[in-house]
Image (cartoon, rainbow, N blue to C red; front, top):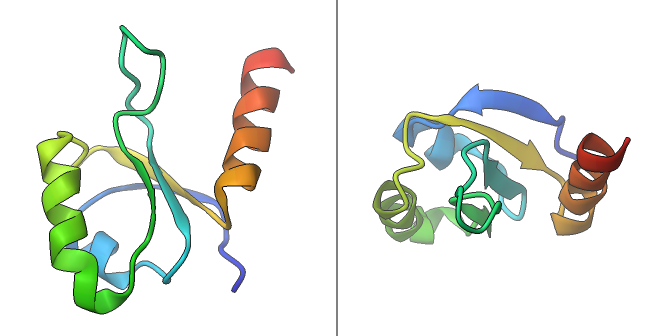
Amino acid sequence: MTVQRITIRLSKAVALAAPDEAYLVSNCYSESTAKSIFEEIVVPLEDREQQWERVVAAQANHRNCRFFNNKKEYQDWLDKALHG
């Protein structure tokens, strides 16, 4: 699986259409921890409703997010964004 890294508003339709095993990261970060308010591997379709509930609980719904191929790709991107 190869995911084209994009930034998109996280609607339920986007969450349900995301490719399995992509790494989903909210673009909203906690002021107290400086970490994304939501980041998870996209689960199989049969478990997406429960994942969507976690997205909503984290208040990451309808906010910008990014999809990566895996957590390492995200961490590399974040390190480059923070440290150049």
